[in-house]
Length: 275
Image 1 (cartoon, helix red, strand yellow):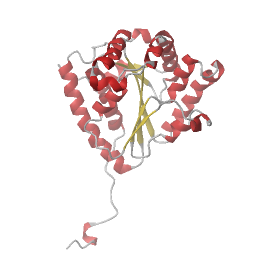
Image 2: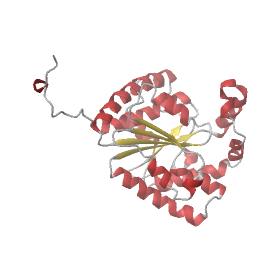
Image 3: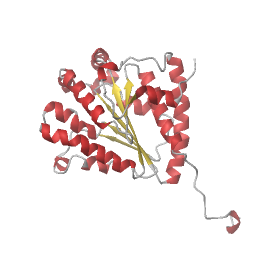
Image 4: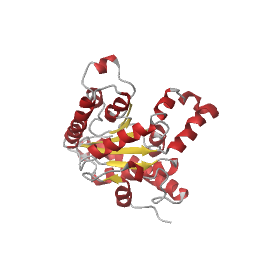
C-alpha cells in the first residue's frame, strides 16, 4: 500500500476557497488517505526527517517563514501533532505559541495584536496551538464580543493573512476535526490515566455541552476564511497516527514548494589562513 502523494492529501483535505462548506460531510474517522496505520507511521517518519532537513535550509536563507495553525476542540490533538510532526526537528528556527485566554494587556489592544507579535521570524517555522480564530470561535459561542464585531472579524482575518502571505509567510491552516464520541473517550482518559491528570479541566465539559454551537462556528470560520492564499485543511483527528501523517505531508509539501536552496558565500577558502 503506497503513501499518498502530497497533492492527493491536499486535494482530499482542503476546504475549497469560494465554495460552500459543510463540516458534517467531513468524517472525523476518514481512512481514505491512510487505510493502514503502518503506512501512516512510515509516511510520518519519512516526512519528519525531510521537514528537519528543509527547515535548516529555510533557517539559513532567512528570507521566508512558515506558520502552521492548529485549531480544534479540546482533545483534538494539537500538542500531540506538534510533538509527532516535528519529532525529528532541531529546536533552532522553531517557534511555538499556545494561545490562552488573553491577558489584561492584550485585551487593551486590538485582538490581532498578540497574534501578529507571535508570527515567526524570517527563516523560522512557527506553530500556533490555537490562534486568532479563537476570536470567531469561543468568542462567538460564549458571546464575549457582539455579533457585529464578530462579523467584521472574518474579513479582517482574511486581510491579515493576505498581508502575511504577501510578506513571505506561508500559512498552513489545519482544523483538527475530532468526533463527539471520540472526544468523550479522550476526556475520560484524562481522569483514568495518571500521566494525563494534569490535562483535565472541568471547563472542557462546558465547551462540550456547546458542541453544536462550536461546530457551527467552525463551519462558518472555514467557509469565510478558506482563501487562495491561506486555505483551510480539515484533518480527520479520531486517529492520532493518521492525523499526524496527514499534517506532516502538508508541512513537507509547503517546504518543498518554497524551492529552498543553501545560500552562497562571499568568502573564499583561499582568502583565509587556517594553519
